[in-house]
Image 1 (cartoon, rainbow, N blue to C red):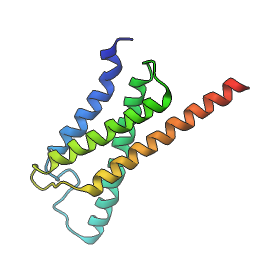
Image 2 (tube, helix red, strand yellow):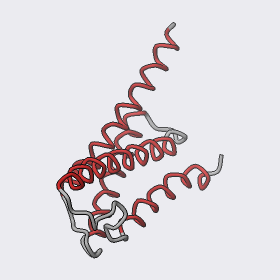
Image 3 (cartoon, rainbow, N blue to C red):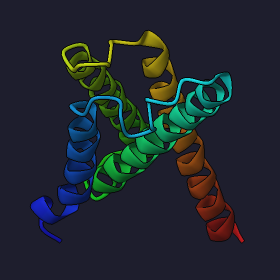
Length: 133
């Protein structure tokens, strides 16, 4: 498989995350300002960040696994990519109307990467068990 083809899914996913960062916060119906709305928006935003960055981690790890590297290096580099994308994402939002740089979002992004780490670890643990049997 070509290097470009391997990296295309993670590059497109990262580009989508950054593209969404350039949009003012109207996607979740920001005009409604009730307390109920704010609570729902808060949890929806956390969920979106977790999923976005977990998927990004898994795509980067998938791309890296084709190279000759131990799994620890793959996981470390993929998690590093999550942190870099998170910083870039929040930096773009600092210059986007109705958005702001938020360290809390970066924490949730890193947590999404950590969920990806756990998913990778569980997959490699299952493969080790299958090989030993």
